Image (cartoon, rainbow, N blue to C red; front, side):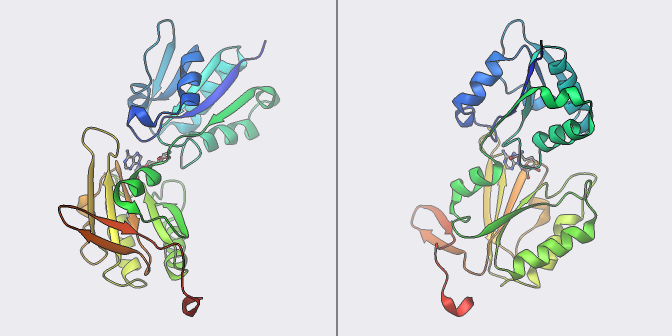
Length: 254
Ligand code: SAH
């Protein structure tokens, strides 16, 4: 008998952002694998085995989940947000490509979730309402010069940027360097959003400008959105401003 592996997106934090499909996959699993704090967000079920691992051990975690499924278990491997965005779905695909042929025969389901940039964007308006791109600022898995080239190209091409993994204790300077580079391409007034722990009890949202953007305002749980030259801020009496990127762009800019 061969088992089954579901790679399940939990969304950014709020239980209401867990899809019914994800909830079903979690409930059906005999064994849950994942980074400890994410596992804690999965509703408890009696008889279910839980294998918590460190955040950095993605390859080993993917292999362990595949081995368990190959041994016949119904396994769910959890991921924050969407599992396909800088997360476990690619780690599993890498292992399936490199691993024993039997892993290719397993039933594999990727269960999507709400990714952090969509949750942050929804809090402030519609900053991703026109063309945008998502980048991870982590240089753990790619060289920093590649990140700089992509920042330059994206800003020059007029994309709004969603920056995942903006900063961590082991990567303290990257975000400041990224802002400095972007200031070379974009107006100083470009709206810049810090969305921290969105959907969790300690959520905070800060809307500022690229000029005033302070890297100290970000941590590992923060997603940063840097607008394009078209992104606008609409003040509202007694309410937070609306930040949005219009759906159309004039032909003068083409
Ligand atoms: N798979 C996840 C992203 C993993 S990378 C997803 O789809 O959202 C981890 C980064 O995601 C963090 O450094 C942060 O930039 C962002 N992130 C994850 N959860 C978040 C949340 N609740 N609020 C803001 N940013 C979050």
